[in-house]
Image 1 (tube, each protein chain N blue to C red):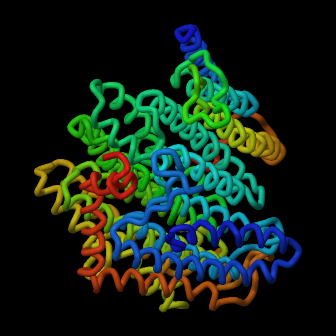
Image 2 (spheres, each protein chain N blue to C red):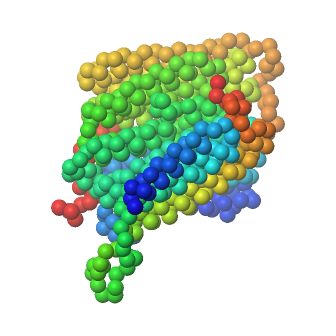
Image 3 (cartoon, rainbow over the protein chains, first blue to last red):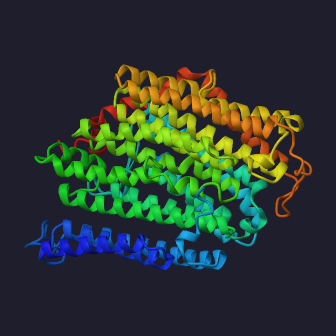
Length: 115
Length: 504
């Protein structure tokens, strides 16, 4: 399972970078979306995909009874998803505005500030 | 409890929220901006004083003991950075009163400024690697909005590059945090440092450290990942440029200093050699890029890149003297670079352009402004007795003592080329005759506020005084940098302070 997921993460990263290298700004944003998902999935996989109960203690107990899932990666991913959501919302507005102002969605036409 | 540790984050956060509540009343937002940043500066000085007394200040969120809770830690380096944040924040807030167009003020300029300062302060103070990521994002989101405020074509084009590269760097950072957690099972930086040292296979950690280097390298605009900076920093209005120039890339440099002195010291030969050559090439490409430019703020932007090289050089040499030099350089650079951008804004107000060919004759009309440019410009180039001389002197001396002659030679050459760039600006903007097609010393843009000349000049004079103070009063500042470097070179002190006796 882990090795399968590792391939999935790799494919997601490759797809994201491929999309980011395209000339269209819409594809650029799609690339960024896939990139954040790839990073989230990576956290999930490297922290160990163990099968376990929810990390809740029975009343009065000091330690959990059996194997429990590690809650921390899930908290990290949840935080990262929220941040990525906010940032991507901004990015979508940005490309729309850029399209309006520049009049094209071609990144090669957006080089005025480079030189 | 140490309230001063939380104040530098709380003050901007609260004042940002209050500014949003005062959305319709720009007047109160303006007053609040100055009051809040002044309070931030006061709180930061308090923080520095008590950090100097106690060595480390640690605060555990929610009352959980250290490796489980998110900790906020202040060592001397953090406290110095917070003081600089306070100084720059206050300078920019006053300058913004005059320079920010009315339309920007109505659309949330001040709340965003507060939020940016909160993000910067949080990044400097946190002791948790994932929390650092969160503060980076707070800072980035505010900077995205500030960069695009106004929505002109150049801003949009610059913003697309800025946003893409920074999001890419964040994704690498997040992946590296995930891999690090998978390897050592903790997120507290002190705990990570402790566990990394006991790891049997350091190869994996070196790979992760490279991911951190790339991620923070993008944020710090180090070679070869700096292209987003000169493409975007000259596009927003000048107070935003100056704020970014002073603080944002330095957060990346600070993060490099933090992780490569505390956590990733297991393979110094490998990692710090890469940093060394990255530093040399950053200095060189930055300064050569600046030599080819003829736009005021673009020249300054390229110089940010080249100066970042000196700071990373201090880290890469990794001797006590080099770290002192690096910390000293950061202190000097933040003040000087912000000041140069502010001066470029005053020149823009006078003549309505940033293009060198459209400028001229400022010395004749405003000799005092010319002097105010000359202080930070010569300081940047490293002319004694200004702050830049001592900063460069310490770094270069450390380079010679470490016998890194090639890199030190590059650093000296870059100093010379920096002087060339500054002379170029001086000759074009201040010295030559006013070009024919420039009508007069008048306000060309309708949206610029007419009065408020004092608000333009107070921050510039204040920062120039800071430069002179660091230059003429080098010894105490050097001792401060020495204390910071002493803590950075002995990470066990940091670990001890954060984890306390609990783990032993």
